Image 1 (spheres, rainbow, N blue to C red):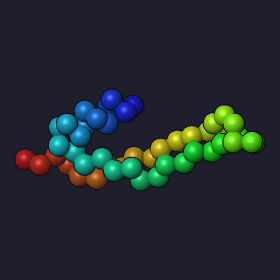
Image 2 (tube, rainbow, N blue to C red):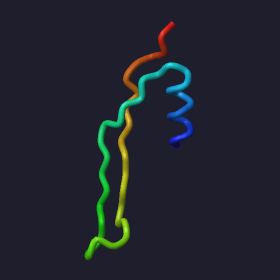
Image 3 (cartoon, rainbow, N blue to C red):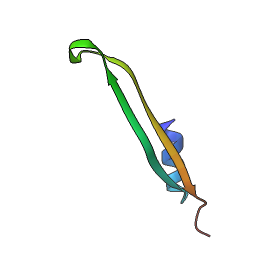
Length: 46
């Protein structure tokens, strides 16, 4: 997925990190679930 977004940026699209969440388990050990929400903000410039 990150490679796809990097390709969009390379072609001129504006990709913004809208939300980044990292949930850590008890005792700060192990990721229980992490995710990032991206937004494609604009079409490529002409």
